[in-house]
Amino acid sequence: MTIELHAEDEQRVKIFKALADPTRIEIIRTLCKTQKEMACGEVGEICAVSKSNASYHFRTLREAGLIKVRKDAQTKFTKLDEETFEKYLPGFLKTLF
Image 1 (cartoon, rainbow, N blue to C red):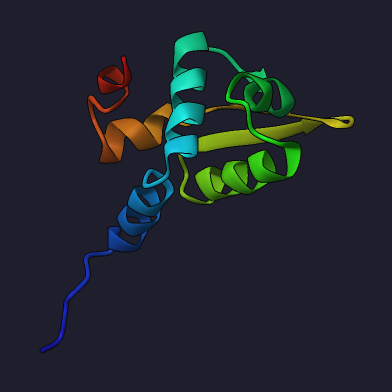
Image 2 (image 1 turned 90 degrees about the vertical axis):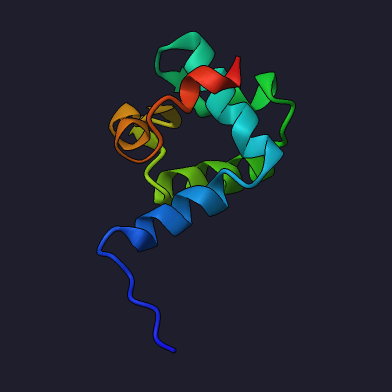
């Protein structure tokens, strides 16, 4: 039996794997509550995640297209990629509260 994948199924798999962790859900919830770009360290502190652990979670979320990260000097800033949520998970962010 051969499984036929649609063009965007790989992206869907990455998204669901990224959201299958309570820490990453809490990061998404934190970013959603603030509705603004935040320093990664600030998000990590709010979510009570160590710097190295937070880095791993941010990378997973970024690779799934759920957040955008930009670097300014030594500080990394992150925000939700709302286009991805609207395309693949419409209404999901409203369920976090």
